[in-house]
Image (cartoon, rainbow, N blue to C red):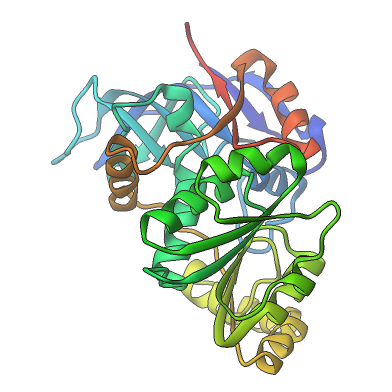
Length: 335
């Protein structure tokens, strides 16, 4: 079968098309004929070797983190899926495999895709959707009346986070460029800060929670807008000890390294009387079912920036790395 394979760690040339053997489903697995796959910044981090200390892959490996498609076969033993089911998944972090014609995934990480959207939209939902859901629900406890600031609202995670937060009754302020303002307002943002000419840290105060999708100076400045007891969750900042223990189950040396790396940002959090958490989302079929229900109920709408045929996946990655996508980029396989 045809697959896009990570052959070594490096830049864009580290991935290439190869013919690889078809995977065979083991006990509890489903084999999915991939219709579409989503692209994510984490794919670039994996390719560049940035995540080697926490996710050592045996190269070469078929790349790709998320997909939609049709169940092609099921492994031995009880299985909640049948051949022909339309499904989507965020694959195992240590296996990858979404950029291929076929992939085997443990059934507990798979869910039936929303019936109201197409394969391309469904393929771009798992990673960003699980990240937004787990950050807002599990870490920030967003609910009615929460004053939430989302740094970077027009990207893949941001467009879903705005909708989820509004569905749960939060007051949402976000940043966007003039090009993205109409999109985030349409998704429900109550206030939009134009990051190209405005400084949110001089304009906002007394927020309950921050979801940081940008990192760097934006993350550092986020603590200045919080009330005492406020919380910051980042997916673009510096990992800390909880990241190692809760998200990764990492050995003690990783925990120690993250503790040292995050010393500065944790100091900022203490001065602001706030908490800080760096989140690695975890794959979950149960949470994908929650997202599918919200999509089919009309409370959540995936935003697709663009789609490319699988043969042009290198172009799709180039577009992703330019950093201007509004929503998700996906590649489609088959007719």
